[in-house]
Length: 204
Image 1: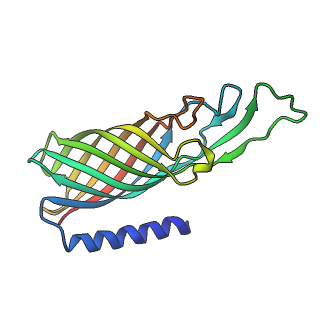
Image 2: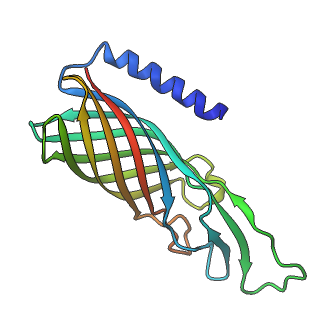
Image 3: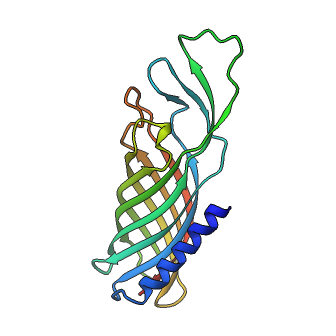
């Protein structure tokens, strides 16, 4: 909770600072989401060892979003988000002879995610519908858990936006992120997830 509060304070400060210095075709916002981990049920380190994964934990993202309007219906979007992808893992080893079977343990992945996407507004009105496609850059904060410190993903999303005023809008977001980069050199484990989120965007 302390980490989450600190992140929220930093994002709010950045939001306030940029709101005073940006042109009118930019929007800034804060979004948060609950994510369902859809990765493989086996997180293999190599062909013999790894974890059997039980995705039973609540995962989330929290971050600052930036949008630049290219045309009336089209915009470029980016974000700076903290995310966790935690789960319960049970160690396995195909060439080991355990006297006592391994117990389940917590596996805590933490990322900074920086997505870039194109967003198209199909109904640019007071209540609007949009879709987006792009890439997701994931920077692992606890890189000792994997062989890679960076992973690339593909981002597909959609959402609804309701304009409270001409400068302030509320959003409901759904996005699917499919991993491209393997987190281990000798296996094909990637991070895949489906997110459901909300956000506030302000024209500045």
